[in-house]
Amino acid sequence: MFFWDPTYILIIPAMIFALYAQSRVQSAFARYSRVSSRRGMRGAEVAREILDQSGLREVRIEQIGQELGDHYDPRAKVLRLSPQVYGGNSLAALGVAAHEAGHAIQDSVNYLPLAIRHSLVPVANFGSNLAFPLFLIGFIFAGSGLSWLMTLGIWIFIGVVAFQVVTLPVEYNASSRALALLEGGGYLTREEIGHARVVLNAAALTYLAATAVAVTQLLRLLILRSSRRD
Image (cartoon, rainbow, N blue to C red; front, side, top):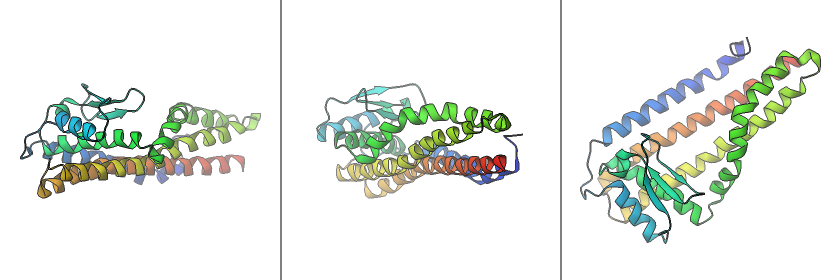
């Protein structure tokens, strides 16, 4: 009943948006993975040059097996790239590789939103696992004096929402850096930059959708708490 009450309609549009965003990023990546860059450099090579030119020779680049699992690990100072990006010379591969290198540059210059996001990682991990169970227990047993668990669950989930919100400037800034570096370094032509931008904008859309889902979920919890207390 908790999961299918009338308030669930609040998050349906956000969930549809999330499905659309996921479909769009997969479509854009698939399309531009078939378009090779004119210079023919691989993603790992471009990322290495960008990092070295930014004074980040200590940042390693590793290949991982997860498709679209590319990420920068600030603790280990490692850029982890999927096979399609690591060894690919496509516009999509170069765009993603430069984007992840952008995160490493953010880390090196102490980009504030990135620092805030890093500090919120434990909160987000903790909250995503416990917020809803705590809220549900408080919701079911509110008459037994456990309604305070609903409030606790909401406060924990606010940490998850904050993480999603602060992720937006981090991702958009990394994409802006990537496009500037790719064009400024001569890795892609102006025409190719436009195609790489399509891929990165599609990826950014998934983060916007995740934020929309989290915010509407929070609104739903607040409404449920209010109605349960009444």
